Image (cartoon, rainbow, N blue to C red):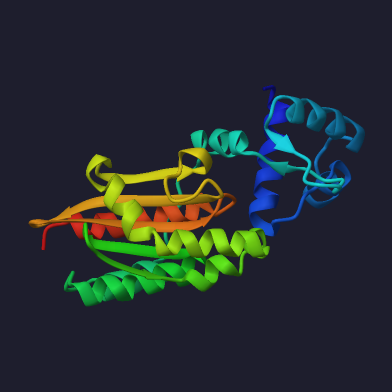
Length: 229
C-alpha cells in the first residue's frame, strides 16, 4: 500500500467510525480538504477495494472499511489518554475496588464509550450495562441484527466461561472473525488480577467502534486495579 492509499484508507475509516455512512471519493476530498483530485481518489479507492480493504454496501455509491481495513488500522493505532475529568471520575468510583465500585465504573465506561460494557468479577459473576447503546448503533437496527445482538447478550456468560482461562492478562482488541463474542462486533477487553481474584472487563460495540478511546478506557481501569493500595 502506498502512502496516498494509506491516507485515503485511514480517512475512510475515520469517517466511517464517526458517521456509519458509506463515503465516496468526492465527499472524502471535500470534507477532509485532501490535496488530491476526486478522480485520483476514485482510482486509489478502486485499488483498495480490489485489495479487500474497502467494500461497496448494497447499491450505495460510497465505500465502507472491511475487517481487513480495521486490522490494518489497529496495527497503526495511536495512543489516546483520558481527560483529567474522566481520570477523576474513575479514581473516585474505584476508590475501594469493591463490586459496587466496579458496577459504577462499568456504567461510566458505557456512557463514555457509547457501547455496551461487561465486567466479570470472577469467572461466573457477571455484570453488564449499556446494551441499549449497542441496539442504537445503525449497524444493529435491522431485525436480524437485533436478534443477533440479543442472542450475544443472552450467551455472554457462556462465551466468557469458554474463553476466560485462555485469555492473556492485560488489554487486548478482538474484532470480526477473531472476536468470540460476535463476528459483527469489535471488543476491547482486559483480564486482570486483583488480590486473589481474576476478573475480566470488556467494551463491546460495532466493528467501527472508537478503538483509541475504548482502549484508553480499559487501560486506565486496568492500571487502577493493578496498582497497590
